[in-house]
Length: 416
Image (tube, rainbow, N blue to C red; front, side, top):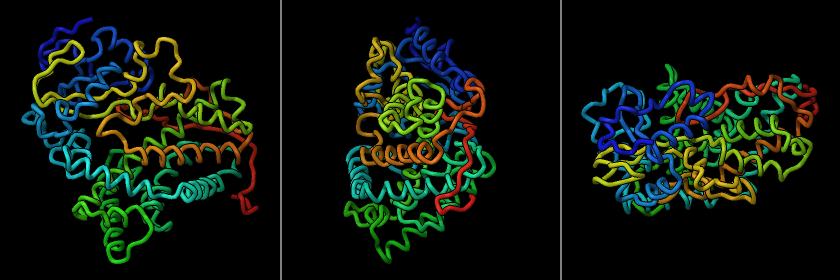
């Protein structure tokens, strides 16, 4: 194991943060990186841009717990002079972005409080009602067919519909927002159109709610007295929707995959609700939807995990690497008893707000339970080993989850 590189830009053994191994065997890759590089590994982003990836649980706790030393201020980055205008990761690692992601200090705390307060006021019964209704509508569309792709036909369609309703959009606006969000995730030629539709829709929603407030998240954020502009509120709502949709969809898909392929969860396919929560918790430890996060920037020279980190170095949060750190997982007990000490929602001042975590959990659990209730004899339609993941080092989810089941009628009693 080598930890003597003094400059991430000169590390001769930096690992490219991409490639098929992130799709096929990320757990083995993280173990190999930890064995060869230690708790903090030098990596290369697209275009051979250097960064550090934190794989150690304690080291990640240190980084996320010190927002002054490891800042969210992207202006600190010492690589900006070498970043081209068409760098593919600019939407993720942007400069002077106006959203909460890159706000620091007291203003960040005020902004996080505004978001948390707006989400905390969501009635949990109303939330679950929306999630059940949209989940049932999606199952109604496929239940008569006897087969479905639970990723493309279900998981990727559910979270944004619920979030849009909570934020204040009408049900009629929901399908177009689903398309826009999934186009943005696709990252190809449709991404710009998707982003434009989301921004235009959000601006329209805020204009409507400014004129006529209602009992929704957008209205509560506009009513906050911290002095944030409509543009800032719009940016935060877009971040909340994007950050809430894809990981929650992958949480649903990864949990259903586990329950359909692991004998330990077979009973839950016949009505065992407790096993749903256990499967969801295990996914957050072992197969977390958000694998790695960019980023933090060192505000001064420091030491971390035996590495010399220079001022301005980019530090990536290896959430899955830290979750599987053998120093904190010596006996596998992390998966039992509802242990939530994983990093899947982050940690520290910039973690996912607790109310947002609760919203995601209700949507995911409801989505899983509706599938198991409505399609009780569901089974995987392909060998488990043939299931594929997106080749992304950032978000881990299935490209599809083909299943078969006995055809049934929609809830209204007619063929779907």
